[in-house]
Amino acid sequence: MEKKIFFGVFFGSLLAVAAAIFLPGGRTPGDAPLLPWDIQVDARGNNRVLGVVLGETTLAEAEQRYRDSATVNLFLSPDGEYSAEAYFQRLFLSGIKADLVLALDLPPDLAREMYERGLRVSQLASGNQKIDLRERDLERIAGMPITHITYLPALDLDSELLEQRFGVPAERYREAESDTVHWLYPESGLDIALNPQGREVLQYVQPQEFQRLRAPLDNAAASERSGGPATD
Image (cartoon, rainbow, N blue to C red):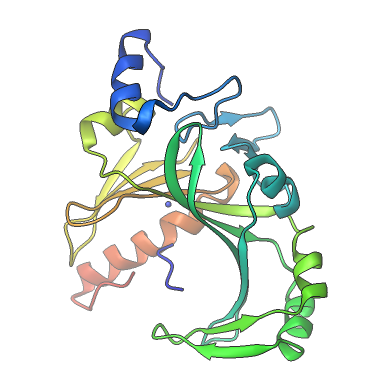
């Protein structure tokens, strides 16, 4: 799977807009809403969003909270890096439909062991290998903490609505070879990628790990200034 390594004050007057745009079919947020713009950063600098405390909440806890089971895969990149991801498709959180990808904190040595006893290996167009895992390894991964959330809303979101919900970004960055614009919120650990031709992508990391989201953009900008091809 290719990855492109992503507060608003909730005014009462905007509630009707949220109901009309974000809550199809008359769905309501519920008593404990899990809304993508509701980001809370605690005294330790850890952020909570969508019912997940990044770096602490495990996949098993997220599945229980979402009342759904994720599809879990292990990936091996061409440069030998392992990553584990859990994918929720067409998940409704507080009435908002979205796909959700959770990156998990899997130690490299354990990932290598899981790779070696994997059931099947598929070669992806990106160059990554996808490994189908054995049941016992899926159970172990379920206990791993979530480090990175990618949130893909089903609806196309415009910049005005996003600014109402998330506030004005600290920085904006336009990709060199596309119309995609990244809105960066370092203090919240959030990158919103606005794509006029496709779905928006929201990425969340711990604020202290925000450089993981910024680095690909900085590298692309440096490449563009030097005359080389921009990188993702």
